[in-house]
Structure formats: C-alpha cells, structure tokens
Amino acid sequence: MTIEETEQEITEEFELFDDWMGKYEHLIDMGKSLAMIDEKYKTDDKIIKGCQSRVWMHSEWKDGKIIYTADSDAIITKGMVALMIRVLSNHTPDEIINAKLEFVEKIGLTQHLSPTRSNGLVSMIKQMKLDALAYKVQS
Image (cartoon, rainbow, N blue to C red; front, side, top):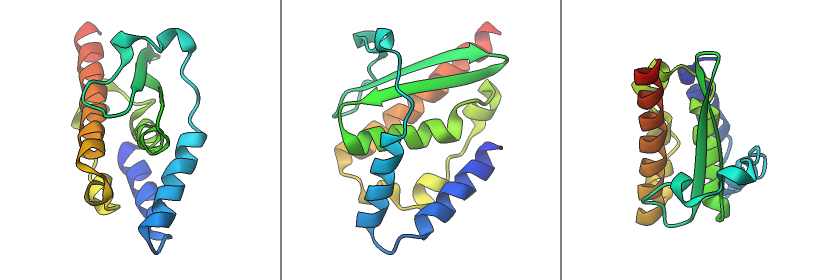
C-alpha cells in the first residue's frame, strides 16, 4: 500500500466519528496496538526532542525500506506516533522524504492538539524524515 493510500484509509476511518472524543479514543486505540519498541532502544539518544512526553523512536533499514518502532509514556502521544508509523514505516527513503502527509490536516489533528502536542507531532515527522534522509545518503 502506498503512503497516499494509507493516508486515505486513515482519513476515511476518522470520518466515521462525529466528534473529537471518538477520534481521540481511536487514536488511543491505535497507540495500544503499537508494536513495542525493543527495550534496548529506549535510551536518551532515541528520544524525540520537542515532544512534551517522552517518545522513543528507532528506525532500521531492511530490504531497501525503513522500519520504525516507537513507544511513548503518554497515551495520546503513543497514538500519534502509531499513526505516523502506520503511514511511513516500511517505505523507501524517497517515499518518506517526499510524503506530503496531508491527512494530518484532513482529519483535523493539528487543530485539536494542544500546542505542545502539535509541536511533538512535527518533531516526530521531522525525525522520521531525517532518518529517511540518512538512510538515503548511506545507500
């Protein structure tokens, strides 16, 4: 599935909810289903800077694609990182770097996050794209 197809799927999922309480619950459920990051990667150098909560993210190169794993100590933030991993993980560096991620606006996420959580989301995206750029340069 392409990044754009995943974005469309997520947009359609969020359209099923009438209010933001339902959307937050969906986000929390996504966080609960997030595959756990290996404990050995829960180190200070894996913490995403700019997040109010602690978010650890690890990326690895496998068969020309980048696989992300992550965890957070906050349930909404964990849902946000799960959402981003669902969209960007298992894609090539070029696909990740060039992803427009328009679904974030379409589902209204940036409008309904606190400024600190919104900054955290931007930091997650920035880190994922920086990792993709680093893998692209190495390959």
